[in-house]
Length: 228
Image (cartoon, rainbow, N blue to C red; front, top):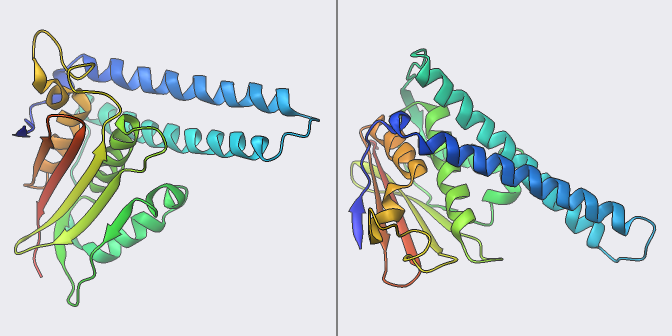
């Protein structure tokens, strides 16, 4: 199944706020669970279990920070105060910085492959919005990936565009919970977060596509115009 995801006005979809609220609530619940385990382990010979829980808390706080940035952008759009600030940007430098940026570097570095380019490649982008597009894609794939599997993101530079290819193996069959009686097997394409990512791509004259195989393999393709 291959489909371009509509760049419709995602702000009109009431499910977006509910989805973000659910994610924030899930993050807080995970942090509290890790804290409770650390208290339980305190003073006991538990090997590196406390360290693992501390790392889990750090990862959850990182995602919380990212979700708050989503809320900030959405609020500006709702208030009609959002301004797209596009400028010609060296893509290899920008993407390299993003992968190495604290606090996301430990999460992105194992997942990202950045194609080298002998000549500078530039695109007219809003760096803040593009950053959120990439991070949204990573966290969305990570959320739906099988346990302990790291999703992959490959950045390549083609003729007239640069491509972000995300791949992951979904942690459930698409018929549930991707599927709904109203939308059928295309439910994965109608998640509000997908419409938001598609909208971010459209702001840069780009496209956002999802290729879902019959079982669990999912490929996401984002293409943004650029020039070498």
